[in-house]
Length: 112
Image (cartoon, rainbow, N blue to C red; front, side):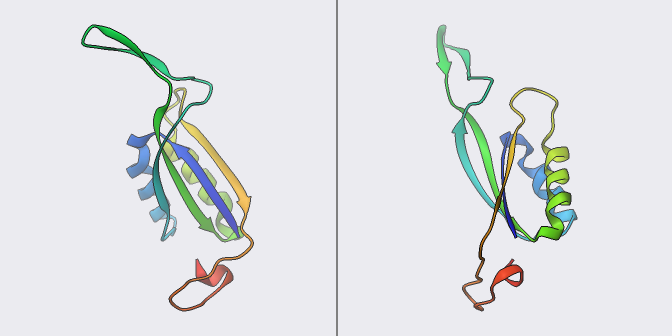
């Protein structure tokens, strides 16, 4: 099992969620986060005053997947979240040692 963490632009959330649903992903966790990468924020003008936006709003998705679905999940996220512009985001994959469904006590891939 793997834990896939994706950082994407907020307006791409619905596209990514729908695309993942189409390949059979039944659950994911969504968190609103702020951060920056190579783009290092930007300056904006508000009521005539210029200010720096250091941290940009992003969406963090966390998805526990069976190893057999990993490649299709990664491809789906990358295609659905891509705008071709800086700041599209990143995807991280880490090993998931154990998963347990609290209600039924199922464990491993059955818990996903």
